[in-house]
Amino acid sequence: MEIKYFTAPIKTGLSPRGHDSSKAQHTYIRALVAYCPTIQIIEGKYFIASGSHFGDTKPVDFSKKYKVLRPEEKQTDVNIALHMLSHATDRLCDQQVLFSNDSDCAPILSTIRQRHPNMLLGVVPPFLKTKTDRHTSRELIDLSHWSRKPIRKSILLDFQLPEGISTRKKPILKPYHWQ
Image (cartoon, rainbow, N blue to C red; front, side):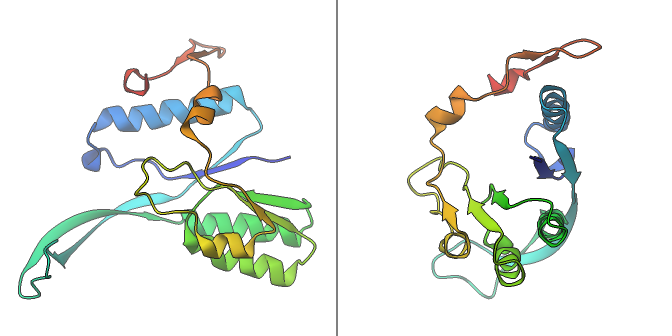
């Protein structure tokens, strides 16, 4: 069994906690690798896109645009697709499970189902924080062989990494703002 974690390094200038967020992400990835040495970390990138957008008004005032900077994560979806398709094509597994609710992943599930009909595909969406969060992507569910409801926060709390993880150097401790 392989576990792959797809992410992109945080841009400190766009994070509310600045450098602390980047440091926390780095700590989390180190902790994952120390706790589960077989996990593979596959990184995409963030870049800052500048543009202009209409304000959030009802009705929209199309005569006013505001200059904005927005972070855009790149390569993560493509990396997921490439890894899933190559594993299916190389027959490295009988089943793949996607932990995501991103409908951008629908084309890869569709492609694998068409080209590798014996490959089982599962979808597990992240938990819903509030009742107003969007529900599990119908498209992802329809393209998978099985899915489950979002994982409840109470269950996730039972499966957190330990407070400290031993390494050959000093232990990795959970950042203060994760407590």
